[in-house]
Image (cartoon, rainbow, N blue to C red; front, side, top):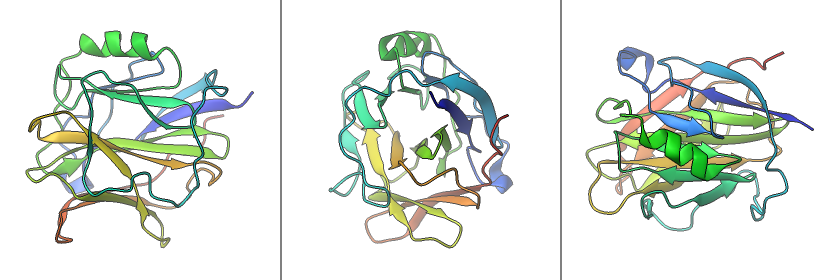
Length: 211
């Protein structure tokens, strides 16, 4: 069985690194996010048999502009057996869980959440062998029309986005890079508005694989 690692990246670019991280629960565990790349260590992936649909690396995770509106705590399949849910408690508080989603939500409910700075993005990735799942949160004055990821000099890849009803001022994104392998170059995440202007961006170096 392959081991899965969660890597939580910086919440903002280095110039804004004074902000706190996004609060999230991962697979029933709740590691704090850091202002620079952090590896929370290996853990066993036990959700590999869950139905996650068909995912093609490099393809858009959503067919419509702007985030999908979801109910609080609603589990959303985001690839590789992982589920993402957004919580109304706290600030930019969400969960990504490969197993025991309900327990992860209950743990996250007790968190105040750490507000990422205005007009910024957080980011990280779940790694299972050659399968990588990128996730993070955005907090922007304007709701992004799209969020993309780019690794090194590669092509931009469209991420899926979620937000709660109303005007929460934040949401999450995800990109399923199954089979792409752990990135070796800088990961860039960019949020755009409808006219293509940049709302927020983030660049981070992937942490080395745990041994």
